[in-house]
Length: 609
Image 1: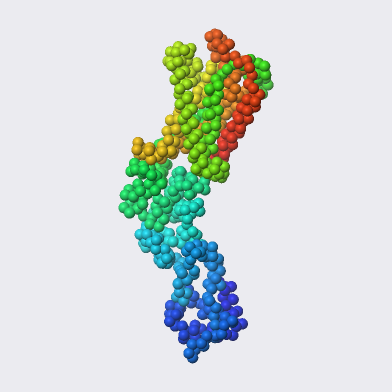
Image 2: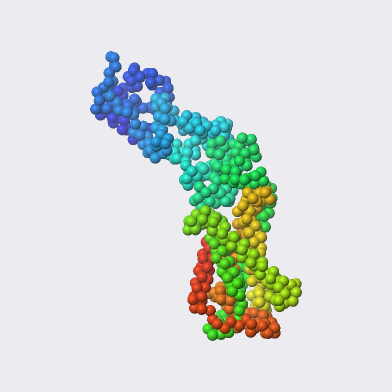
């Protein structure tokens, strides 16, 4: 009892003679009420330091009752626990136990205030008390949690550890209720110190939030995915090796089948709490993670150094020679076709679909960030994001097929110049890398470091070839892994479920590589280097000026002159004003969106988001 309550009761005794009479001791009351108030049990109850009138207060509006020769000092109002337990009463008022759905007043749990003992610290008794009403939750008594309590492991949860004591909320199949299915479990299972103390694995929370399910929960959409309780059950939580466990081999197909219709024994080989950092437990995942990380670090290191050195060399040259090395084309200068309308249209499709994939996929990759949460909300939630992502993926497969067709036509169309398909593959118009590209890379770095002249390029540079071939690698890595994650039940007929863990690593890291590369390296190579800043419009209008062609691609210029083909490529009519404005608005918008995502990704990675 609080000091304030004791003071109030003492004041009542002093100012009210009738109450003072009744307060002479419990013995006067027990002369009539001994059956209702067993003296010895009351003396050891939580209310033992209270007199009867602390709870049974005088009712001045009623005459004192009589019973035979006995007459009470006063009539008494109904007992209200809130007079002393104000905080608990306030909490109870907003709980599910103060509703028509599950009504339970104070005496529903604390049945006899005269013999009442505190529940605090007695988790077994708490469970038994709740079970008095909640018979459907009786499987808790067969759970590993209850068994641990009986063995003296008092960190194990009882009912009130998950549901609280007085602020018991309703658990419906809505956003709030679905979040409870996971967050209540992680309150303990994400506590490494507590888990290690009780010899329980502590990786549950960390690995869960690395999964598709956990990322959606973290983004604020727990109702869209399975939470802890959906797989491990809410109350009958058993160890995996227990044959009756919902996650035992005996029941795992049925458990996964709740959401994944058609789940098979192969499907359930998926590792829900995979540790890709543990080489002993998961060697395939470990080496896949090492491989993808090495690819990321190696690619970004090479090309970021490449871009930084290029920018530095260009700055020095611009400072020493204010005249640009590549003169800007005049409004009426001669221009040549570099890209066909089909190639321009294909590039526009690539830009739109790539941005759609990035804006719907990166929020999952960075689900722990505020911007990821906001972006998913802007997209319209995971269902709409999934629909957009899959639509953009279909478009990506479509333009990849078109690119394959164009490549085969380039190689095997006999009407094209260049000799045999083998000669074309290694020729100057081919995007296939060759030894000259290696020599150009070495020469370019020598130019960066002021040890040689800038190399002379033909139609394609080595960085343009890398961009093109990245599409093929990307379709193999991100496309194949994406299909597995899109159709896991079907894929499980071809590969074991743990391949989905591999696919998740590859898909996620390849997405980071693709978006990071496009929004930094590709943007620099095509738009931000001094010769092109703020934007190279050739991919939108297909035109390259005579000055640019002669200065940037002198080998192609000489070759076209020698072959007499320059005249075929001249473009006389300028692009329409409407198209020129439209593609610039489109281009700058795409670049701005890409840079925004790049900045958000950099912030998340640097802040461990």
